[in-house]
Each structure stands twice: as C-alpha cells, then as structure tokens.
Amino acid sequence: MGKTLIIGHRGAGGEAPENTLAGIKRSIEIGVDRIEIDVRLTADKKVVVVHDSSLRRINGDATRIKNMSYAELLKIDFGAHYSSNFHGEHLPLLEEVLDLTKGKNTLLIEIKNRRESHPGLERRTWEIVKNAQAENDAIFQSFDDNSLFALRDMNISSPIHKLFATFVPIRPYYAGSNLHYKKFKRYDFVDEVGLKQGYVNRKVVSKIHQMGKKVNVWTVNKPNKMIRLSNMGVDGIITDFPTLAIKTLR
Image (cartoon, rainbow, N blue to C red):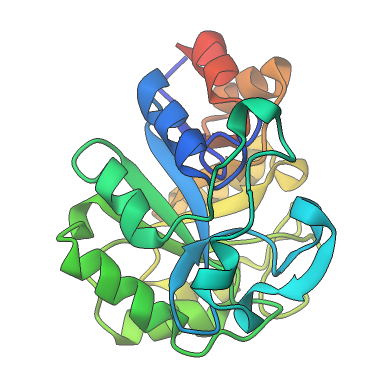
C-alpha cells in the first residue's frame, strides 16, 4: 500500500470542535499531512475560519456570519456545543491558524463562496497568506469556479485545487463515474481535485491520474473505506478522524 496523504477535515472535526484552534492543534500533534479548513468573511471583512454560513449548528442562531462583526462573533462559544472540555473555544481568524500551521503543516483552505456571496474573499485570503509568508504552506480550493478563476487571475503562487460534488452534470461542478472529463480542460491551472467518496472508483482515479492531476477524497471516516480508497490509488483522504486514519493506513 503506497502512502496516502491523511488530511484532517475542518481541523480534526471528529476529535475536537471543527475549525477551531483546538482541532487544528490536534491534527498537528498527531502528524497529519495536511489540515483542511473553511473561510468566510465577516461584516467587517475579517477572514474567519468557519464552515457554515450561520450559527445554527453552534447555538441555534440563524444569523449569517457575513452579517456579524468579528467582535460580535468573539462573544460566542464555539466549543461548548461539542463538549464541555472545549468550553471557551472562539471562532479563529485565518491569521491565528497560520500562526499555528506555518512551517509545521500544509493548510488546505476552502473558499466558501458557492451558495453565499463574499465579495473579495479570495483576494483578502490570499493577502493574509502572503503577509504571513505562508505561500508554501497553503493550498486554495473551492467548489465555486468563479473563486477558482479569480485566484488563477490573481497569479497566486500557492497551488489551487478543484472540488467536485455530484454525479449529475450541473454547472459549475462535475463528478462521478460519468465525469465530464472534457470539462477538465478549463482547469489546466489546477493541480489536484477533491471528490466525494461515493463517486470514486478505480476507473475515475485512473482517468484523472492520466490527466496529470491527483485525487483527494472526502469525507472518509471508516477504516474499511480508508483502506479500499488507498488501494485504489487515491492520493489523499480527508477525514474527521485523523487519529483513526493514521492507525489504519500507517
């Protein structure tokens, strides 16, 4: 079995509150190859590390992240809903995460701009990475083609990855055994692709490899699936349980 990269999903979302400093520290401690996070913009244009567009899963509040200032968000406990052991975890800024990961791990930054518009998110995120001199420790990815092409047109020096999420050929993303391979020509600037695990088989992996791109699969949390995908030749597994993945694949 060749080495398959182990990528902590949202930090280590099954072992600590997702997208928190605690989760990111956990992934660093156990030795993952990469750490995946999500970023959005606040009302005062801070780049924060959070997956959902609202606080509903955190505290039942439907208020949108983009409509709140960072000062308002700092008042919210982002750890207590997961476990009392994580009481007091705050919503981190991208700068705080880079302070932890720079020189220690590769940060896989997902631009969350698919269903909700965050004008300027791509440029602001890149500015923060560049100012931290973390270009070599960061990778950008998104489902949204507009975000990917914006990053390409900015001539960023960090790698860019494309996420796919469905069988059905609905723009702007394509995936599955009926993958529209011709559409890949538009992603000539993309180094790797991320596929949902249910749409991955050996033929898909082989075809994408033939096109010169690597394949990462999300979100893989069961040992038997980790082993099966690794044996298929996928290049990376994105998981909520990186400790389990390391025990299974290393």
